[in-house]
Length: 65
Image (tube, rainbow, N blue to C red; front, side, top):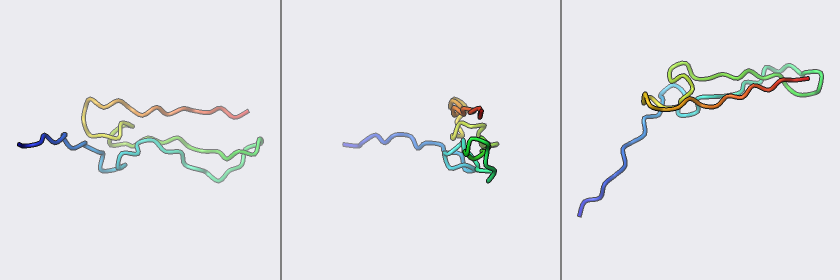
């Protein structure tokens, strides 16, 4: 009897499914933490997938005192 296989996921070829990253700038802030940039993939707009029904990744912005 044949087995049904799930459809392959359509992972974004630019980010390989890791759509949101934090890039360390190398700058130390006054509280001793590092300044980072939150960046999302340009091709998939933060979804990690090439399907049009995917939801964007949650990117949180931290405020430093």
